[in-house]
Image 1 (cartoon, helix red, strand yellow):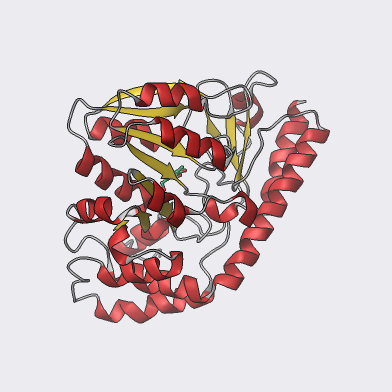
Image 2 (cartoon, protein in one colour):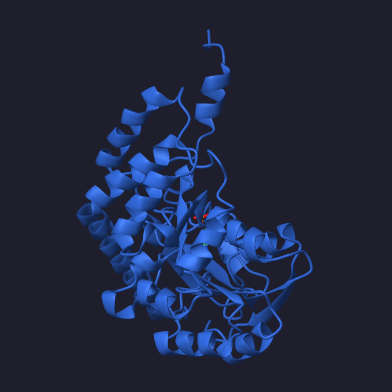
Length: 343
Ligand SMILES: Cc1ncc(COP(=O)(O)O)c(C=O)c1O
């Protein structure tokens, strides 16, 4: 006789699998959390009867120390998503305008709608780069401008001097979300010095997350840092008891295990280069990728026809392009197999 199905078995059975070579649509990390992070998480479950801190001071201080900024410059949220919404709630009113690229991270149009903002979208060029001149122009009338670096879905990065040029052209009261959700995949010479940038531009919020390279998407931890004045304003909107107990132990354990995390990041970047080279050998172009995914523009092939029915979960775009998260070698083989079969 089958064991009776309990609420718990139903819920646990429906959890996403940590390792799933076909799950390539959300730019998650393909590896389960590191053992040290898992044991740290177990260490906090016995305190679940207690509230976390009223405001996440300790997590804020941990992040500030790690990134080399003052505590008052940091805000913390439920993923980068929570941080972005916190910024929008703090600095915009319904009817204000937000500028973003198109296509961009799917969240942005949703966040704008939730904050009741009008949007101006600026098309990327054929190689997935921003038109920063057009964004500067549109930003003259906007309260918020969002720029992702690396960009999602194309993985491209704009040179730091071009980002600075954009900032000098925007009004001082237009808040710029410099979304660095994938910054850990950049090499040292590709990174922008965030603390120095926010010291020079009081309207920039650098947004980061533990969902991507740190592999903690399910825990929902993100943060932003900016100039102290703006930081104090944003902290006013910090949700009381809004960050669960597990966040600070997971972040501390991840910082302690950073060598292992960097090894994983290097593996993912190497797998991305391999997949990109193999696709190129098959005559398939992808944009200049700098994160844990590749973007194959539309036109060359009908990507839905290539991937539908293969079991692979990838993200299709209205312009016919497809974004594929870099996973294990097994994922790479599945992607190459689908493309070869369709070619
Ligand atoms: C560019 C970018 N920003 C923000 C996010 C949101 O990340 P999270 O809310 O999981 O931290 C994502 C997730 O895909 C993203 O790609």
